[in-house]
Image (cartoon, rainbow, N blue to C red):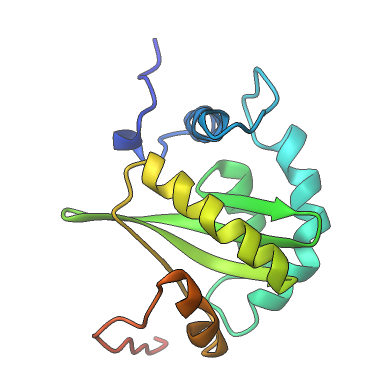
Length: 161
């Protein structure tokens, strides 16, 4: 018997668990997902393909490739949120004191991002997140302030090895 999926089981231990939890959370928000799925591919991968130009642009200069995002979505580690004219890809960040939903790519029209942001925040809260954030180009900082986002007090630095 499989372990029931709750917000405490994130990240999902298998693609089946990820699909189950993701579908349950979206269903609670009024979204309808296809039934009896064991992988993300039958219904999500065509949408990801449609959204790839926006995601590819959003990943310029990021630490992930489009192939890695595609595999992450397929496996259930990343989540694709989409509208007809935009998309966002998220991942869970877990620590002993915090569960956060982090946007790793956002692209398409600003109207689409504006429409998706509160839906993603609702999804994160329902899954037990206490924080949300995003990585991207500096121009997003000013635009996301309308939703209450602000740069963290600590600077982020990186170095390639």
